[in-house]
Length: 259
Image 1 (cartoon, rainbow, N blue to C red):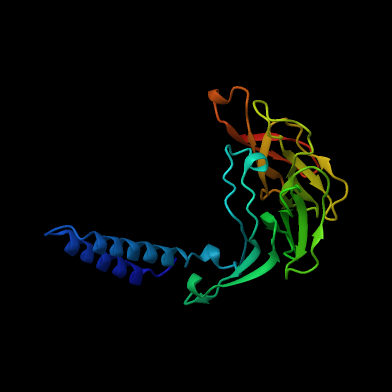
Image 2: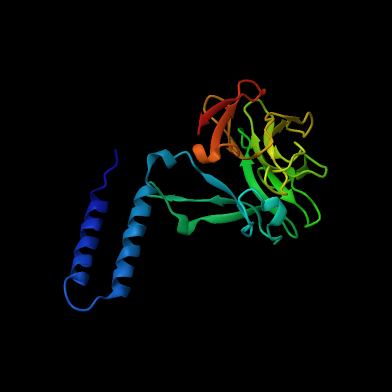
């Protein structure tokens, strides 16, 4: 549904220039790289015209160092503790119907300082933002909430457990991943972590998953169910090591989606 005649002409010109560079003589790697990057930039600018992006005004994201654990399920055990970063919003302007990332403005909502923030997600009405935060190497991750402008920071969970991957729910509650299951991974020392939920004020914490493995990254399906990833262990060599499960926010009807 878009007029892409200008982009087609741009692609044709890039192809002509590439053929001229590679037609004869010694290879000019620098010129080829330049044209490759020009083509990638043109493709990106075309994608940024996608009409599905039209509702987007701001992008919520986190800055942090890579965890670099020894296993994908051990970042709370043996990842290097490197504080810094925080929670940010990227405000991207539009020009001629497309995003212009080069003119985007970054706004900090929460400063991690000597801690580590992770996994931010906005509530459905976009007034509150939830994320996991570890204030020091001696602390554990707790669920935090702030207003959309960065004010009114509040710690919602506490205790010796790791609580992270918050996922706001349509009913006003918050799903999250936690080591509150008090289990170990079946073949090593890391604590297992599974799906829990709580109220938006941090009260009424209860498990949604009764697995004794490790789970990640809850999100909400269009029908209101929670979908998340589970690391399987028994018979994992026969099928998929990571599976997708779904459950209703009230904890009923758990269902294997994939794997």
